[in-house]
Amino acid sequence: MARGSLLSRRAAGVAVLVTLALGALAAGCTDSSASAGQVELRVWAFGAEGEALAPMVADFERANPAVRVRIQQIPWTAAHEKLLTAFVGGALPDVAQLGNTWIPEFSALDALAPLDSLVASDTLAVPHADYFPGVWATNVVDGVLYGVPWYVDTRVLFYRTDLLRRAGVRSPPVTWQELRDAATRVKRIQPVGAFPLLMPLDEWAQPVIFGLQAGASLLSDHGTRGDFHESRFERGFSFYVGLFRDGLAPALANTQISNVYQEFEAGRVAMYITGPWNVGQFRARLPDSLQDSWDTAPLPGPDSGGVSLAGGSSMVIMRRSPHRALAWRFVAFVSDPARQARFYERTGDLPARRSAWELPALAHDPRLSAFRVQLGRVVPMPAVPEWELIASRVASAAERAARGRQTIDQALGSLDAEVDAILEKRRWLLGGRQ
Image 1: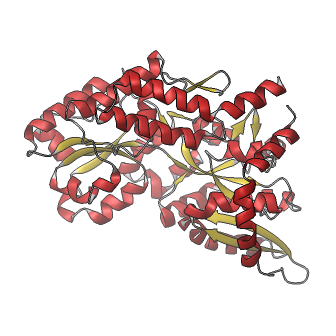
Image 2 (image 1 turned 30 degrees about the horizontal axis):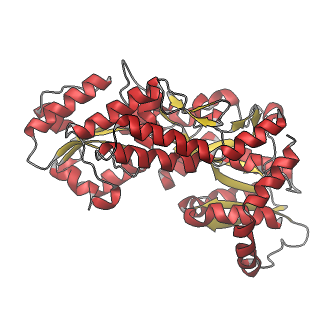
Image 3 (image 1 turned 60 degrees about the horizontal axis):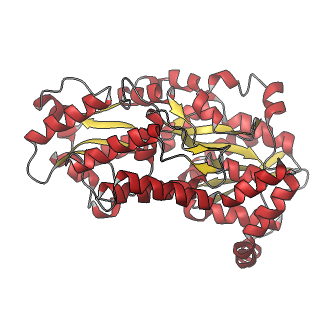
């Protein structure tokens, strides 16, 4: 099926949302045109990154005095709806920060400009080889590059070094069996009601990671059907569920945990699979007496170091932008390794450029070394627009199995049925195209 047909059907699918939201978009727009003789470049950034981008924008404007960059800061909670609304209303910016799991959706809408030719003609500014391969792959849909990784995210193991030592564990686990053994040993020295591992049940990342580590593909038939009830994902899922059923992890969601940092401080949690934002949180929230008693490590795998998720945000250029060349200049500017390192200092967001990790702010921080190793072992999520909805179903299935409400076989069977229903339209669209 032609991309234009797919565009029309995707647009129709969000018509109700757009009808409700277009009025709000129009009401919120104000005339802030650039000064005479200047070109205005509109950039959208989400969350705290929008505020942290401002100093970089000022540097760009000084280097390009004929350009005025207008940043719009949008909360993450409103970002997806606003992007869809702006797409249908023809009001998308020139450049936007986009979570890399959103790239398949917006490429299917034909909203994004392909970037392959720009990267090929500007290899010094955006050298493909300087990016973590698994993260770069999240920006490629059907062989076409639609984004440039801006900052990266993955999951590693945070752990209490002192508790593992007391339990007789001298180094962080490297294999699944070592992880289970370490958790079992720590459990013996913890007070009643404490747990060695924390993996909140409302997070889909952990069950997906264990499945990926076992070699699962997650989806089959060109991303049109669930592939969770197959041996590889079942192996990882069974290991994950077993940690709950054996009392090594609490069957709790984030909303049921009053304060994870207090639990970690008190020793009621010894190991926690989480992301880079918690490096700063642990330093800020744990007492000085514990600052030498925690560390990070790459995730263990079935037989050796395992893979993790390739997350983060990318910079994209909108297809309808009248300033694509200038937009690319801006994307290349914010992709500079030194600027990415400074951005990390402001936000805690890890750089996408490997050369940025050689700069002092990152190279001299021992708790970031696990992330650097892990980013060399990351896997992109399936490049389908429905992935985030599918991910929420994975979390629900994992919770049912971990709480004992369903067997593993029942949970995975139900999950595949739910995912197949979600992907029904994708099967129809691809069937028509073929």
